[in-house]
Image (cartoon, each protein chain N blue to C red):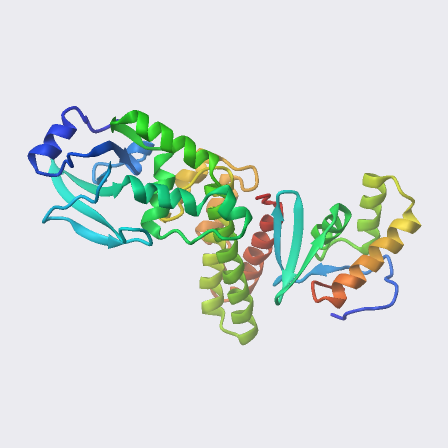
Length: 94
Length: 258
């Protein structure tokens, strides 16, 4: 697995880091690893939860389109940037 | 109730085991929850104003003042009665540990096993004498952050065990990885049950009974029992089972809203 920084292709399959700890606490969703904690918003939490090693970036983007009524190219770009960010923090890999 | 508690207070008094300042006595554990069998102990709790002093008491340490809870044993009609003696002040201290104020400030203190047992058992206790005191304390536990406290504890334990299991896999120590995955699963099931308000993680033999009672949608009983009994474990190649348990634990943790 790699930790990409370039834009993600829609066929890539992101996977959560199994050693990341998650807590859903009174409406907040927090992901932590190695002493670093990140609070995710609703869309971020959706992406993280869907990154189970079976859904592609495109699959996740299509869920965002359905849930939040935004266009697919925008969802794909946002989703890719977010996954890149979490990969750089060691919370996810593709 | 399988045991007739008529005359219970008199029986304790005749044995010198009834404190003059007792506020309440109640039955807890498997008998109170309707899960007992013919060999089950009858667990009683007596709460008084002052620490009860009796030569036959065995002291168990707690992180409270006073720092012990005394236990007496009595045999009644062929059944072993185990009676724990708490003080009102100790109950107050336990409730303070799991108060909203303490929890939201991140200052929740650890509950020792006897303390956690008492708080969760207040919720399912069968009153024998002093019912109004018991009802008041039960309401206070329900309104406290006891649920949040124990769920957080169980999730932390499950996370730790998951990390152990993955570390053991990386080191090629498959036996330890299996045992760590078992622990992770146990703690995560406890977290699911506690989040559903079904407590009792300190007495693990009742986990299946708790699953049947709570019937959490996050884990159907058949799926639970297959994982609990390691039905899919290949002893020659346990890694897939370990990874499946780890994946279930992580997925489930994300769905528990504390």
